[in-house]
Image (cartoon, rainbow over all chains, first blue to last red; front, side, top):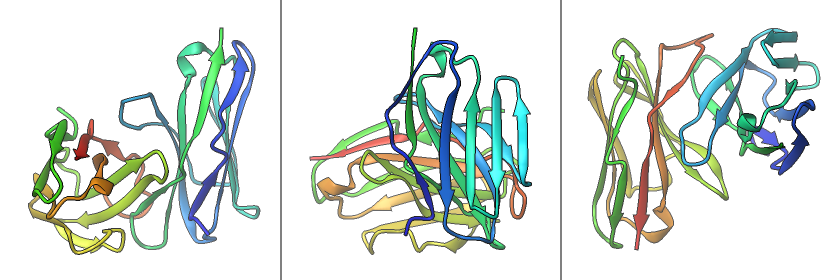
Length: 111
Length: 115
């Protein structure tokens, strides 16, 4: 079983809609959770981090964490064509500092 | 800050040749990571250093791969001999350290093609 699993997509939404991206992780001792965005040919960049159960909002982005279900999600409100990218879920676990990434979900926002 | 700096950005080589990828982490960051990214397998953690010491190299595919961090500002990933299946984008990343650490900063990556 992979450490982090994501639906690879592709996910297509119309401009202005809500995009919902999901991620599950296998290790219950996972401590920190992140969403990275990666444009084609570029390196990943952090867009959200979340450490406690519940929701965390930052502008148009909302991260949701449910540790009991081992589930992390990212909602993008008012999706824009510039949001078209691959979104990577990452977790860290244990006493170490290793970041484990999912394979990413490709999002296309259609104008 | 200049960010994480990787070189070369692109490398094309022939099977059997030695490849050396280089990384300069962000000044003050004490954790450094090497990742490999392919379409099939996504981002794979190869090795992780903390304070220049290798902490976890369980992701290094085989003995052909080796990584060093001689000081806080420089790391190398070496593949010898290289094989076509090593073709991928190799990312170096750094962060502030252990525990609830926050952001992982990536370099621009080194795209390796082994013919």
